[in-house]
Image (cartoon, rainbow, N blue to C red; front, side, top):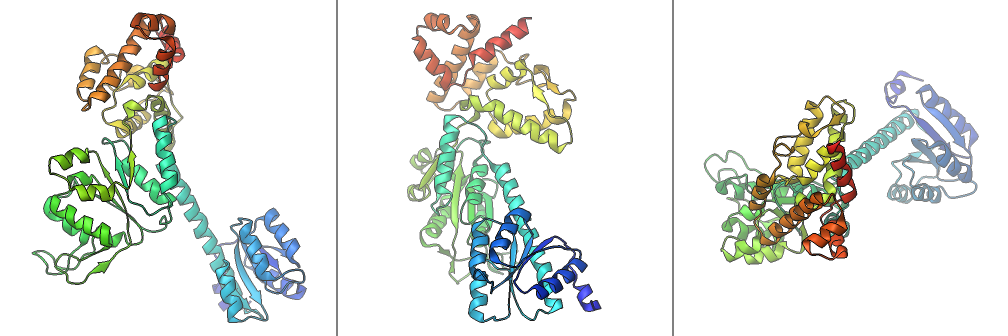
Length: 476
């Protein structure tokens, strides 16, 4: 092989399948590819080639258009239907533009004419190997993104959230996510984007509460050079940056009324002008908004536009605070603890029963964000494999977790219904402890039917069996 071909040699080697009934061509191509470090397998008909794809899982397939038992384009369709990630390069001695176009539409990465040029053959295989590598990397990245943004927990509330995400992800409808700080609103927004039709397009996020009122408009819509003092050059805004993708408007309840009116116009018309500009720009953006405020109350106070609220509230998703997901707390804690321990190259840690009860009893005012930060701290600071209650932060550990602290937590609940539910759970837990977690005696004492109490226990995620064992362990 001459030097020009050698210089084009692929830096990525792999397994190549040749499906061609011309044996001399197969031998010549095999020799060339083996010289470049590839492993080569050969099939002389479609049926044998399809079997080898399933058995050998090659990275690249050189597929002839004319085969004795089947049309090569039909074989290409079958390869795609198998779900194989092999990159297919079509080869033909009777090539025409129509065939090449059809092959490309069916998923072929290249089309080579016979007689084969050595330079083009080596380059085409190299490009196919790189394309496959990029596809694998993208697929791995998507899996990591899915894992990173997946929702953990089997509580009824989270099951409903997941069901809603599954339904709306593939649509283009506007979504409004509400919930307290730290409940994972951006996490849900990214998950909707990753599972949707725009997943390969930009995801652009802006925190409306973190940007001063005088700057938020230019951040969203951009500006033209010279439109104001300091505008030394034109700048694209978030709407333009998110074109064909998703724009996440976080804490939209903190947006000024002036900017709200402009956002409403963009949502209705899908067009806008940069600040200081005359040109109207069309934009194709899916908007997902989020807020920790009660927008209906804000409307009554004149702080939020009612028409914008109804435009945003097409698909509402309410994220519950962590204190209302009692049965998910340990799942989340163990997930983050394992993840952080793994990142730090340390052994996995576990919680003692008393530490678990402390985590379950804590109010979690910072929600999942607070829990995640604490798990990162524990993964680093606790050297033992077993995390005891004493290792937990003071506000969580039993040495600070008394009735005054719990009542103080109740005072931080804004809604009467939430405070009532929190007090009810606290009351039931205390009475269960007094009666050694005997449900029948507890029900009789507090004046509830046993079946009614069982429903309460299930609703609040209270495991009487686990708590009884934990109490016994502490007494011993």
